[in-house]
Length: 188
Image (spheres, rainbow, N blue to C red):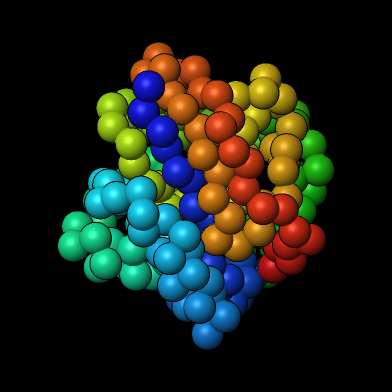
């Protein structure tokens, strides 16, 4: 069974209510180098990333050291905000959604969130070899929830550049090998 090393991106330079696709700040850049040091001995392995800039930038130090190309996988991107929300209103939506369950979110905001979750899990289940995946807080929580049969949107308060390792049975079943570090993470 392949091991998937799910890395939450480094600290972003701007919040969700300021920039839809921020870069990493200086601290986030340091975190990216540190996670590269932590994972270097595992590879070289394939490296997959969300298309969002903070994940691509977090993946680059490791991919460069391994001499591999980063494959972009849109299905491991951040949860989309609801249609019609502005940068200013989507942070309040996210905070409210994070306090609930996936069933509640789908009931209130629609099928696109069930599809997001299913597509994310399908993307990861289709990986047949050990891989490092650079993704997001909610996306990695989707996998943790699937592995533990927990419907909450937030099962773990994953820190920036934490590494959660899971195995995949290739049919949508995931088992947690090691949880990533947790912290009081500012969702901004």
